[in-house]
Picture 1 (cartoon, rainbow, N blue to C red):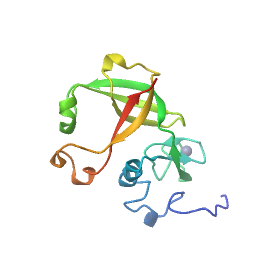
Picture 2 (cartoon, helix red, strand yellow):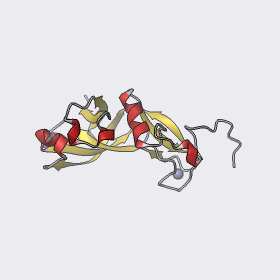
Picture 3 (cartoon, rainbow, N blue to C red):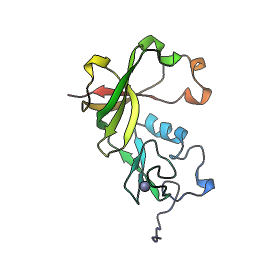
Length: 156
Ligand SMILES: [Zn+2]
């Protein structure tokens, strides 16, 4: 056990009381930060895994010794597919291209790519952008209505 004097809501191990709704270790906290243009991950201090969105425990090694770290929004397409029938909020955009993007930190985040399936390839550089939701709030769960939409834009 290390003598960690920086323990707090952004650093594990977390107590149950630390994981409140606006904690960056929850999805609402993750999206609040994203709305402020900050992409957060939890970095495991035991195995160096990068967890996006942040989780209070590492899904690679089980450690709770994790800390919030802001991430670069650039990365490369790791894998991708085409979704012909997306959720109703995105049906006007169908078919959509969905990708797993590996960030420069090594963390991976899934999201839509603003490009046709045939124009995407593995390794293609992309950058994460966020947009204010403009669809009917009835199409989503109430707590998601204010969450920013994240989209990967091709780079270069
Ligand atoms: Zn770990």
